[in-house]
Length: 112
Length: 111
Image 1 (cartoon, chains in turn red, green):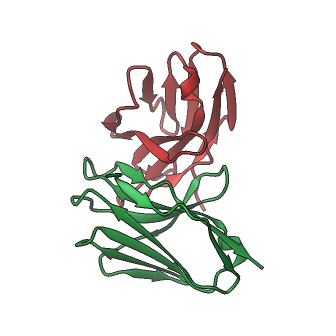
Image 2 (tube, one colour):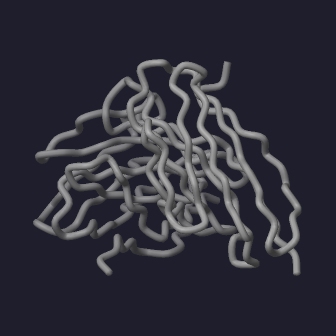
C-alpha cells in the first residue's frame, strides 16, 4: 500500500538555525500539506500546495516558513530561524482528487 | 465557540462493548467530514469519511447531521486494538483543503 514518508524522524536544532523537513508524498497524489502538532495539543494546519504553488496557508505559516517541491517526488518544509515554540511534530500529508488526506509518520522537531 | 469540539474522554470500555463518540463543528459552510484515529505519538490515520447519508465500514458507523452541525462515530464489538484517540476532522470552509482537527476523544478498551 502506498504511503507518505518523511525524513528525518527526529531533528534536534538550536534556536535560530534553519531546518528543512522532507516528505515524499504518495506518488499519484496532487495535493500536499504540512501540519504540526505541539505535544498534548491538536493537529494544526500549516499550508497546502497544489500545482507548484501554495493554495492556502494558516496564520501560523508566517515568513519564517516556506515550502518547495524541488523535484518530482520530494516536498519540503523549511523553517528559516527556528524558535523554541517551533518544537512540535510536523506531519506531511497528501491527497488525490478527493479530500481524503493521508499522513506521513512525522518529524519530531526539538529546538533547544 | 471552538471550531471542532469533542469530549476528550477517556472512554473506558470492556472488549465487546459498543461505544459512541460525538463531535460538533461551528462552520456551517463545511463540506467534508472525517474520522481519524491517532495512536500515541503517531500520525493521524484516516478511519473513514462521513457522508450525509451516513456510512458504515465493518464495526464502524459514522453519521452526519448538517442541521445540528453534529457528527458521530459508533464502534461495535470493541477490540483491544481500538484503543486510540479518535479525531473528528472537518474542512473549515475557508478552502476545500484546509482541515480543522478536534482535540480528540481517547478510547481505552480493556480485556
